[in-house]
Amino acid sequence: MTSAATPVRILILGTGDMAASHVSAYQKIPGVEVVAGVDRRAGVLADFCKKFSIPHGFANLDEALAWGEFDAVSNVTPDAAHHPTTLPLLDAGKHVLCEKPLATNARDAVEMAELARARGLVGMVNLSYRNVAVLQKAARLVAQGAIGPLRHFEASYLQSWLTQPAWGDWHTESRWLWRLSTAHGSKGVLGDVGIHILDFVTFAAGSKVEGLSCRLKTFDKAEGGKIGDYVLDANDSFTLQAELENGALGTVSATRFATGHLNDLRLRLYGDRGGLEVRFEKRIEALRICEEPDLETAEWHEVAADPAPTVYERFVAAVREGAPAEPDFSHGAELQKALDTAERSHADASRFLRIGS
Image (tube, rainbow, N blue to C red; front, side):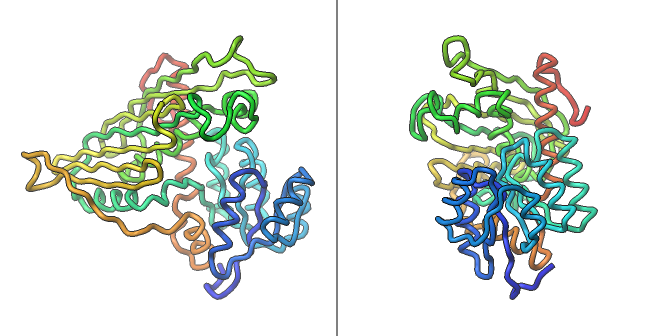
């Protein structure tokens, strides 16, 4: 642990699209220095380091570890690389903020969580919607009993990039095509954004998923189901029913075919003394509550929320001060257990399965 006055030196592992967001966020935090980048693509690495004035670049993780002049790492590698790259970082005593999902299966995610715990290191998952202030406020209200014991919930993550080109042409751009192909490492919409909406639910509800049933759907999108080397077999939509450990029952869904929605999250929580509605649409936050004395008239009122610290600020605070490392690797592993169970449920004709069964 370092003191708040001691600089925190960050290494960026992987320099793809999300890496720029990590660097930009860190460079806004006083006392934090991004000291190195790692990428096997020499030209991409050189451009990245030059753009962000990063003094050191390494072709691979082994070279960076041999150098060792950093305290913490943002792991922004592809999903399948999270597990094999995070383990040596933890063994070397480095704190890690890992992009979601923590791993591509629960076994690997649990191993990462157990190693971080054993080494006494900060391990956090970049579940970026924890930065949404109204979600943080909703979680506090539920924990305070504002709506009574939670009974029911409805949650959705709505994208439409398979219906329009706002973010680019998915038919021709590899950064979108790989997300549609299991052979290229994609877990489909379930693994890509399903983890976000499951975190949205479980964080606000203050309870883990106990069991679920799931249906995945892959739609025909190209002749022969293939574009170039990309077989378009990853799931495009999912719906699931989930029961939480606190007894609440509800539905969770996500799709890339929600025409009219670019990147919107919705959550409704119902207790026996009130209801909450959380919206994050077009990057605009909104929170409403219906509570006594308005239950009989079903009147809803807007609730204000103070800005929330970013995951990058929370990560640095955890490294410096031992502040809570939320969401931590253990939570990431719990979410991965739910995702694995959803895949098994679909394969077993949408049968309801307990987590880890």
